[in-house]
Image (tube, rainbow, N blue to C red; front, side, top):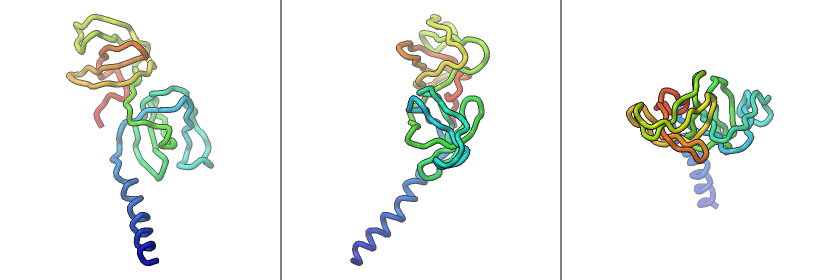
Length: 153
């Protein structure tokens, strides 16, 4: 019985330490086809937004148990269940004008496509102000300053 209680005490004290391991802020993206943002960290709280865009980047600002307090590309903030987020980086084309996707990370690189503001894709490595960016089967490089979710935190 004594071993059981000792083991139980170790498990209950270890869980909060593991949960606190993650450092914030960090980037995440939506993993599901539909995700609710709530005003508080629980399913009893009111839903303020429903997201229907996989890979939409989110800036995680705080963590509480299985919930993450996030900010979306428009600046809306609220709570999302952690299981609906992934650390796979997504990015969002910001601004009001289309952005060039180039063959290589340079302004002189061959123009492959023009991406409309609001396009969401998967983010690759960034260097010298350019990021690898995948939108479905299309792959290329986009200026880092034109992508929300590509900033270093």
